[in-house]
Length: 161
Image (tube, rainbow, N blue to C red; front, side, top):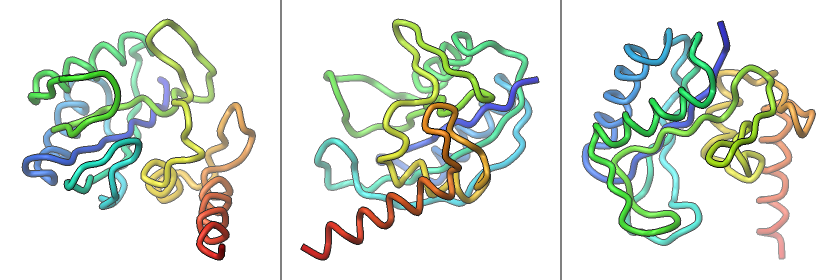
């Protein structure tokens, strides 16, 4: 069984229900749900929107290989009503991202594990540090707790200008 961390995000509709529904679906079709982080309200990242996000991270155990996990994640997004209207970031009912799959490093045309830019994303690091503080990023070689501390320090420094 592989231990997989999935990032969940939503900024339109009933956001709490969207996270709950995605978590239930993932647990029923992708693997055994082990842990759900707290919900975190965050500002949009990479685009502008008047809608704040709710974000969470879940840990599952699965026997499904990474590429098939991606296919299932995208099917869940579609089933829940996510529509891509443009390239890049936009408002969404649900986003399901594979953050980590055990400690593997994996690259294909449409999937990169670990998920890119985790170290810059508070909305991923904060829930990851909550549920798996000692999990070590397989590329960066640092724990989630340490990466969050570094991001917090960097944010604090940038405010001191």
